[in-house]
Length: 109
Length: 264
Image (cartoon, rainbow over all chains, first blue to last red; front, side):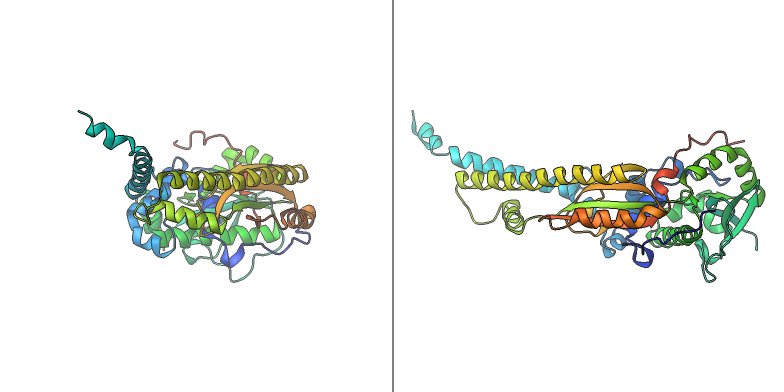
């Protein structure tokens, strides 16, 4: 109806639009209308789709630079492991700081 | 060949034709189906790709998803250039034209209501990122590697405290900046939505996304909005502002209640 009035040139969009931005919109936003084909996209959150992608094609996703799950402790056992390792190191350091008191106690009868 | 109908958007009737070479999802050119004075923009998609089962599988296929999402957005984009589309969520598929007509009849009132509300308006996306200051990121790297050069525990803890404090400062500044920016932009825009921050690795952007907002702005005010963002964003060290758009009003189109009884 309304014809466009001097819209500024597209920013960060058009051909080179960020896939994350596009997915955020086409998967998560817009009008939700169930078609005759009942894919339950209605109930599938973007996160779920992302998870499915990972399960389906980790390598492909990595190729595209999508590897966020590696840093997310909720999703990645490696990230969880790193987190544990970091915590461990910190505790060890703290322990090292207390150490001077340690040997004395051992020497006591 | 038989085919299903993939609906991109619903619009008020519009005059200007879409660009000639536009191809939609699965390569077919989008067409208009006018019913009850509303236009559904759709294209034919192959049945073997869009049955429920096929869709489930295809959505897990990154190539397919990327191609489909981009094709969907391309059509919406083209529509945005000539009218105000009400974008549908990706993969809204009907068996045939009569399925699309029934949907329009069933939802006519709501479709009109939202279309009227959005008419002549577009969406702009604004994101704020915190860039990590270089020294602190180098330190963080050292701290994350437990096997690195041994330092005394006190040293370690002190460094860690400093680092946390520096990081907190940047965050503090970024969140104040974001709040102020959002306040300014929201006051200018007709409506606004705050979205969850994007994971930087998924978006490929550097830095941590702290504000991910969408603003509904009339076409007439868009130029001014863009200038406003430009003005507000300048030269805050460690903080980056990103503008995307104009988008169809995706973030403001979803004001429908859950789909009532399409089952029947």
